[in-house]
Image 1 (tube, rainbow over the protein chains, first blue to last red):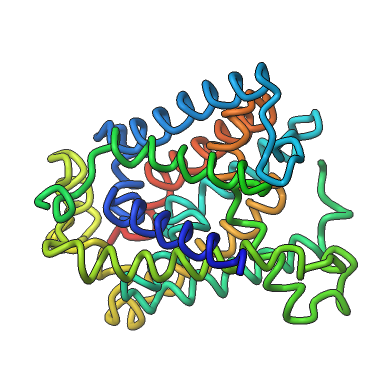
Image 2: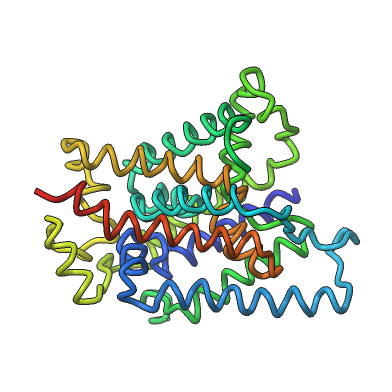
Length: 137
Length: 187
């Protein structure tokens, strides 16, 4: 049951984002008001430590447990889809106070209205799939 | 034990997010949550409607299991590890939100005006949740990643596209909070 590991890791992640108050709408509002260092500290420390880990793991040619290289994310060059898509995402992030992780974690926190936002996100995914041929990438 | 019940500061939460990414990398997977929306659509049979969803969604089952875990984690965090649901907000944010008509900002985890049952009796509540969710889902697919994929995983791997995306996150977020919230909530 390999899947148990991912369930436990998800539980761990859900607790971190709840206890770190990252799922709170207010923390995202404060971030876009530049009123609180909290979210900058969270993302900044996660990225700096992540970058150090990735750099060292590349140097040492570290492998995953299955012997394969790490599945590091690389993105194709370009800017249009990243800038426009990112901006649309940012509008939604400020409205719901939640990125995709917190949208699910908030269910566990007992906020059932978040299902409306999840329905919106699924609709957004479907509409993107239909329009993607017509959008600049 | 007291530490478990207090809100965790950024220097605890941030490194633990990195740890989550590292464990996923060692497990031969990658850290990203928004792709689950694509998987959910594919599981629901959207492949019949659009080629974009013709994917081997069974290969992404682990990520759906991860998401189910996050829901359980949110439950444990909220109901067993968080006796106090208030969020200590900066004074300026509190007065700005009161100016928009929010009652007692920070008294609970989420504003009742958007997430409470009473939000369903105002157009703003529906609008913020459904349209906000739509932008999150649409934007994440258009930009090919969300906060975990771009801001954490992508930036950790020094990806320029991720930096451009994060700049976009801020253009959108700042526009919404400073220009559009006053129109949505104003008078």
